[in-house]
Structure formats: C-alpha cells, structure tokens
Length: 159
Image 1: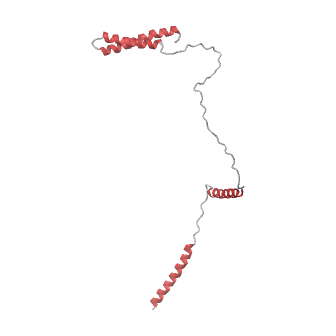
Image 2 (image 1 turned 120 degrees about the vertical axis):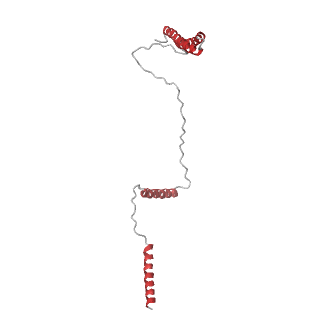
Image 3 (image 1 turned 180 degrees about the horizontal axis):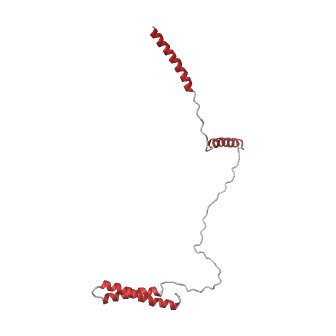
C-alpha cells in the first residue's frame, strides 16, 4: 500500500510540475531586439504613412478630375558631319603644297626595276634561276628606287 501511495503522490507531483512547465513554455522568453543599422524599420514606417496619406488624398479628390497632361520627350540623334575643320594662326607662311595622289615615282621605279631585275637575273643565271631572280630583283628595285627618287625631288614631291 505504501508503494501505491508513493506512486500516486509521485504522479500527482509530476502532473502539477508538467502543467506549470507548459504554462511557462507558452510564454515567449525575452529575445534581445536586433539593432536596425540599415534603417529598414524607419523606411517601412515612412512608406506606410505615405501610402495612407496618398490613399486618403485619392479618396478626398473630386470624382471627375481630369488627369494632368503628360510631357513626352523624344530622343532624336543628331548626325554630325564626318569632316572637321580646324583653324590656327601662325606667323610662318605655309607653302602651297601640291596634292599628293597616287604612287610616287620612287615607288613606281622600285617596282619596275624589281620586276625587270628579276627577269634579267633569271635569264643570266641559268644554273640557278631562283637565286638569279632574287638577286636581280633586289638590285633592280634599288636602282629603280634611286632613279624615281631623283625624279620626285625635281618635281618637288620630296625635299
């Protein structure tokens, strides 16, 4: 009988203690509030106040209000000319230069001399025509360039 009484007493104590623990479990423990460093809470308050203010203003407005005209801005690219002129002043008088178009006489002489020299070298050196053509081409191009350069100097194209 003592065992039954002690078991009943123990069960009653446990029932009471569990009931009190469930009551304290339902209450939330104090959690420290995090610090709002970004100002999000203030922004949310401001936003809620502005939404409330705009909704009351919209409700108080006249029912037949005409909307304000909208301004439309259209972007139109402006084409600029590709040539730009610059002006400058100088105390030195500029020479009237002739327009330099086409190949110079030196370049023409080098090409003609190179082709002619390569042909002559290939004909002259019958044992090794390739080497003769290379040597003749280099010598002919040099001679043709020199002659053409002299003509360019006479014409005033090159100083």
